Image 1 (cartoon, rainbow, N blue to C red):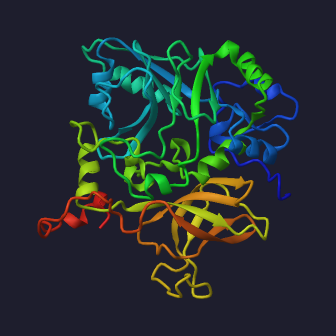
Image 2 (cartoon, rainbow, N blue to C red):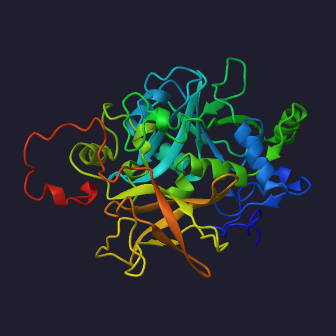
Image 3 (cartoon, rainbow, N blue to C red):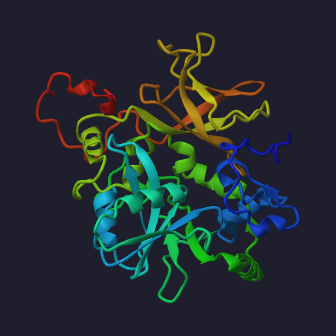
Length: 403
């Protein structure tokens, strides 16, 4: 393994991709695996590709992303009633983000939403399951749901702008700007490392995918792979459903209340957990970014165990804990950044000291990893309501309160 080109990440799921991009036929293309199967990991020079994307002049094939449409006059009020975001009066060509939770507040689907005035466009990594669930929830409302992934392909651009009237359907990523009604468990918007990340998704007819890319290349934008886009996503602490979410994830753990949850809207499935954890409790786990020791050329895989050091390797503060040597979390995303080197996102127990140097299991040994705090270790937001008195007996033991 070289410093510049590590082996491709292991596939997270063995299932064949729904679509195989024609851009994989480009000379030098190396196919991605796991959740990005179907598009290119890189096109032969991943470091140069990442630098081009960071400079703001590149195009990324995201044609494996799912697209669901909702039409009908009740579409926005209906989506408003089902999800975490206030979209009842969403203006046309205004991008937002929302979550679909299960009854216990666990994340099931994450959606980028933009409405063009007649159709709500939902961008998601879980299109078939999301479309099926929405279709079951229509009842007598005037809405129609369709999974249109076979007809529409996504291209990503490092552009911080909404789509204009007459332009293709465009979703501008709101991360990490705290939306109205949202709150944050991490850094202030202007101090957040994702503040400078520009990212939008443009939808094009699938049969025009190659032509649209060539148009951008003619303007001087190189085609880059998911190695580049994932490295900048990890640097920006941006959660992703296929990576950071498991069957226990609540949005507080990933700082997703800042862009995807409106705390003052009406009821929706899972809303009780969202409110209880925000107002009374603390998220049981927290997202961190890890700076991995690359001196041994070992890079963990997604899912690798994160551990507190044992007696031979104390925390940065010199303290040992009762969990020393035990697994306290797992790696959710791994990237090799062109400036930061090997980095990762991980979900760990909230009780893990924020100054601890952690150990990450790799094939060939463990590597040390310094934490960069994404979700504050105290587990409270700046606008958390002040306590009015002692909690009722047993309330602090609720599993969703993380006490």
